[in-house]
Length: 444
Ligand code: GTP
Ligand code: MG
Image (cartoon, rainbow, N blue to C red):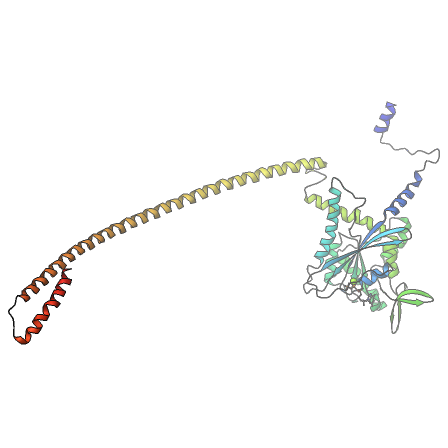
């Protein structure tokens, strides 16, 4: 038994055995189908195209229903994306369809940045999925996947060439999403012009290195149809919300004074080819390519920018654990450097502040001394002035007393004078009362 186990684990050779009877694992594909059907599917379409190019009408025509319609104005300052999800059911298959369309695409004077909101939207959906994947407790089985599976790029049927806005946008998006270019409103261009236009578009895409989605040819069941359809790209489509009765059958069509364009008539436009390729044959491949090619690329670049890699600088394999340890060491050493730098900055700042404070203290002290000196000088001069005033007051009082004495003596001497003529008698006798008053006041 032990020898047999050793044989199992060491042998690298694989042997093909024949079964003796029915075991039952041939039902695996059926199990897979029934599981997928019970879970339901999701499909996310991004419609990029100018305002009024026919995005909503084509979606209605493709899924044979009427989704909400909200016309965009031509006065948007920037491009933004509008996303709406719908639950559809066909037979017993449930489909969660998300239609995202560009609002205001091509309406700005400066269109240089028009691709940016679209690129950001696609990246954000990848980022959300990556964050869910990186969670310890993740729930990917019931995760509502919003990653864009296909981008229908609506080209204006000018008959000339692609606009630089179209080329720039497709170039920016081609590594992020499966792009299917379509010529919109193909009923407005003649058959001959359309043929030339298609050739021109394809050569411009090749010349600018733009990778559009190629219908896969590796699965034998679809090799033939897919390779012939690859040659028909870009599809020239017509959409219509109108239904016209033709041979007792209601069909989608556009009616004009000169005739009727049947959306599903392959000699009128490529609508049927688009529906066949997008929905009936390659929907699963589009979903798969989104996960295995575009998301994988996003994930790799994102993890690399975070410092994760599979191989070390010498080419040796690098496990997640190694990456974690290396990153941890790097972060710790960076932390130490930062700590040291912060410490030094702190010390030098403290020194600077200390010196500044000392300088201010010295200045204050000097000002205080100056004020003190000024105050003492003023006090001294005031005291001197006071002294002077006191002396002046004393001398004034002395002079006043002398003047009073003098006045008194003068009055006395005038009273002792001999009596004058009679006519002066009156004056003589009235004089003493005035003189006594004045003298009294002066003496006071
Ligand atoms: P916004 O969402 O406002 O940017 O417009 P949209 O791109 O969704 O265009 P919508 O489907 O609303 O169609 C705008 C106009 O174009 C409508 O009058 C449609 O009837 C018309 N239209 C749509 N598809 C076609 C088409 O294939 N050919 C022609 N000639 N007209 C079409
Ligand atoms: Mg619309």
